[in-house]
Amino acid sequence: MKRIRHKRRTFILISLAILLLAGVVYIKFIKPKQSDAKKYPQVTINPSQNTDVPKTATANPNVPGGTTGSDVNNDAKLIAPSGNFVSSHTLPMSAQAESTCTTTVDATCQIVFTKDGVTKSLPAKKTTLNKGDQNGSVTWPVWTPESIGLSQGVWTISAVATLNSQTQTTVDSVKLTIKP
Image 1 (spheres, rainbow, N blue to C red):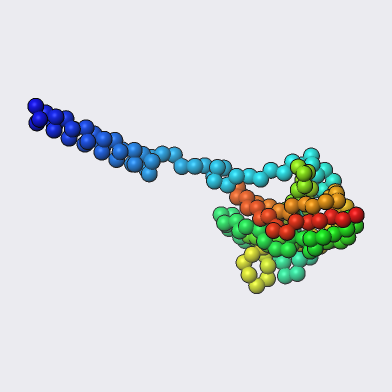
Image 2 (cartoon, rainbow, N blue to C red):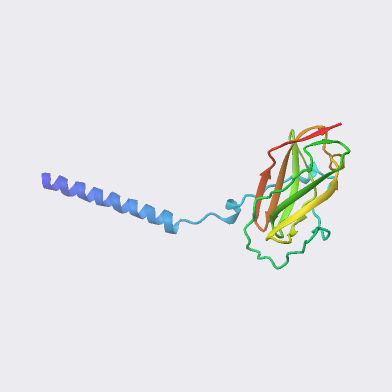
């Protein structure tokens, strides 16, 4: 009787070990991998919230030392955007500002401002190769808060870079204050 219980217990333990091993093999080698769409979620900006600004622009040929970067690999890894997203974090409505975004060459960058559910942005632009390094940059040389529809108050500043199916967003640690 003891021998039968021992054999039954051994059989159950071996069966559980086989099931566990089969589960590990399935998870590691057979289970379908995540699609690129799930790995790189897209950031969507509602165009109806910013109708006074064009959504696309071509690369700025006037960027000092800039080239088109057309020989860049399409499989390049997107670098999180950095730079001086706003030249001053406190601006009167009609004051001129400048913005820059640095990321991977040939990526599209857009400076986005949000406040109380309202989104405004500078037009998206394609980065060009910087002289002396492998990154790409784009500049918005002159703009005013009034020209892109920013109202008085405190706005969160983000830079959104996209390249192929990849998206990277960087939020400025200092908010933009618009004064009358």
